[in-house]
Image 1 (cartoon, rainbow over the protein chains, first blue to last red):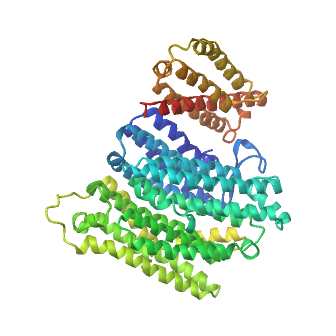
Image 2 (tube, each protein chain N blue to C red):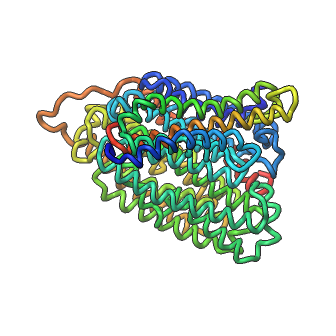
Image 3 (cartoon, each protein chain N blue to C red):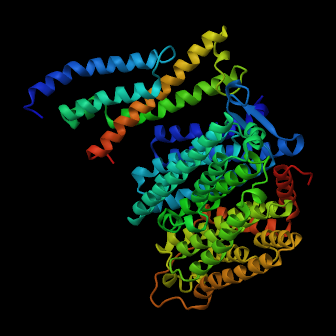
Length: 493
Length: 138
């Protein structure tokens, strides 16, 4: 019986955990509830991926209202993969959260932290699973509103300002998205994604649909922090509690990229928006600028959290670049980078969280010799950094290899050169941290600091290990990503 | 507002009517205009009016922060719980028809409970937001 209800449970388990956190009111109880909810979600997501691999897409009509009238949860390869990404990060981050939250969030608000975390997880899983364009908006808002609260819980007072800015930009993004959906509804009379895909080609040549596409693109691009719309991201990541930064950096932008993929390849699946509506030029241009600008700005940052935040903007550029190539290889490069980037950025931010726990700062000048004071933490950081650069045998290499392959398949070799050049920029900013932490002496008179507790080191090393494991054994993820891309493009893999 | 007798007497008369009207909007929601959200806002506004006219301390005695916080959580749990109940009784999540012997009775029951959950959560949220803005409660 449970197998049949997995799609609903995926969202309902974390949703019901959130009010339980409020009722329990104690940090330890709330933490335990979120732990159980996250691990259950992870199990459900893995089971769903198995079901989809074995038997094709699953449709779950909520309340037994048949689609397209009712809300449909629809799990295909792409959504199953994103569900696994989000729930994996959730399951890894939450054991880590306990010690880190204790240090960075006031204890009387810790239960609210876990409540918001559960809601955020609910929202992101919901975005990935829903087959209804309006329902996606609802989940987008659940995820966003809770992440504004999570960001605002940072110890630094500037976190409030960062969260406020994120709130304004995020709300504009959501409004644009819903205007786009409204325009689509006006022209087709339906909100179900599959139904929209069938009805759109008939009205594709109208200005309303073009406007809708523009609103949807801008709205979701704000949420995923695509280059000129990224201004909310660096401060939000820099001042949020460390756990939140790791969790959001590894998931929030990923589900937004997923939403963008859904719009272009499912909702507008009947129309080739890349050829007929100039989507490719816009996306590819912005992605390339993001890759350069994000990496360049990252080189000059002195707060390591901010540095990684700017690097995220560059990495989002790679994902969007993959989408804009719009071939099976290109799209699978974008999708696989969702997973790989979640692993590496998760590992990097978790490592940074350990440093903040012991050192109280993530500033480059405080990191002198940290590699010798916290060897395990910094070794994981280096692994994450190598992935970011794209060194062979790490996941970053797999993503970039696939993207370069896609560019060459289309004969666009300048793109391949650009990908290599921006990787070199990543070498610069990762090396800066390595140099400071390993080749500088520990400052005179610095207090002895211990390695981070095991509850934080284990999650950190799970992600860092995964960076290497999935880098060396890439066939599994590449196969899934290719199957997902093929489903989206409607061809056989 | 100690001295403002007209306001105090008028709101004393109004508050019970507001609460009653909120309940009407709540439970008449499946036949006419209304529903949980509107009812919750109206219900919460009665307490906010009370706090504005009398004082915030008395309002806190009437509905302590603990109560509004628990209600906030219980409303959502009620909503999600009805959905899960439908799942256990053989339907899909949020299928009301299976909640009772006769499908239409089940549908009435389901939507009433769901809207009640919405109403409780919205009322509690309104009150909590007001308390937070009004002061000490963080």
